[in-house]
Structure formats: structure tokens, C-alpha cells
Image: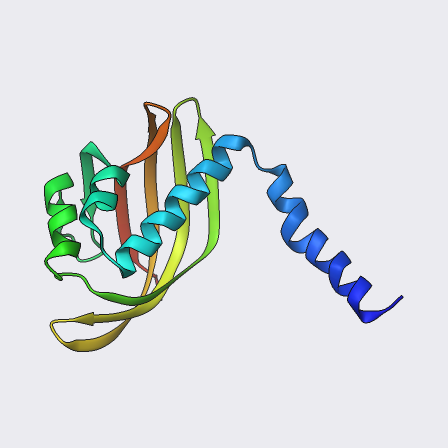
Length: 145
């Protein structure tokens, strides 16, 4: 068996097979989470508005609490600036029109013109509204040492 065939088999078992085990809603939630990750790096007012539920409760690891308007403003006004974000160890659980997402988030920041790094755990609640998954709640916490 050639290296190319072996690589294809590994990709299938590592990447493709786990995706097939996910439900349609789990994939849609994963896509919504990815869209959130991208818009946190490259803020877009309309995308932030579309991702957030009207009753969003967004809590930082620092304890700062934001509603939907504060969440959008935070990224648009440059209060939180991310130059890179990586999500790993993600779990998605669906119950009806509610999804619970847990993951670890690492990355690089540039807040108040100072470079920094980020390593936090996140718990999010997503709700299916009008056929789209909207961010209803987010709680971040520092990784325990």
C-alpha cells in the first residue's frame, strides 16, 4: 500500500468518519461556532447581529457581562481584538432546539495595543430560532492550573 493510499485512509478515519457520526443539527451548530470564531477575529457588524440572539447573555472570563448590544459593540469598537483563535476539545450536545457547546479556546490578542495570549474554556448555549442557530449564552472561564 502506497503512502498516498495510507494517508487517504487515515484522513477518512480521523476527519471524515467522525463528521458522518454528527447529526445535521450538530454540524450546523459547529458551523455557527466556526462563524463566531471567524467574526471574533475579523469583526463584521451584521454578522455579529445575526449570530447573537436578542436575549444574549455573554460573560467573559474576567466576569464582565454583556447583552447583545454590548457583545456587538465590544468587537466593533475594538474592546476585544483577536489576531488568532483556535478551538479544540469541542463537544456539542443537542436537545430539541437547544445546543450546549463546550470547548477550549486559545489564541493571540491585541487589546489596547498590547499583545497577549488567551487560554480559556467556554460553555455556550445556542438556540434554533427561525431555522438558524443563534448564540443565546456564553460563559468563559480561565483554565484551572
